[in-house]
Length: 76
Image (cartoon, rainbow, N blue to C red; front, side, top):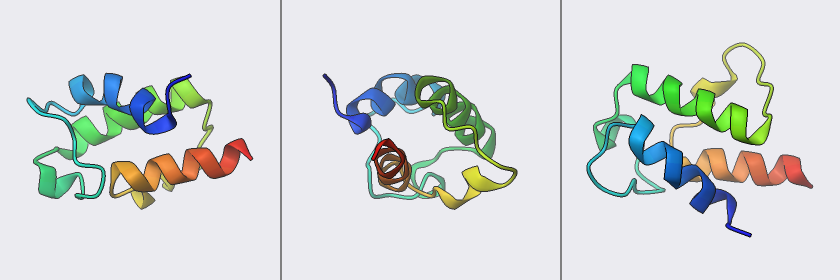
């Protein structure tokens, strides 16, 4: 089975509007990702991983690695 990060990279690359692989440790804003693209990517991640976020929770994930760590911690 693919790792969480690999699973996020597949749909994330298209939703983030990047023409390259996202850097897991760069902030989305420093990677040239708009807030609209970031929200769209978070929605895809929510669908994939059933995150069921509370209001404002997505804003705390500034990097792909932050989001990956959050998902993995919820998986137990």
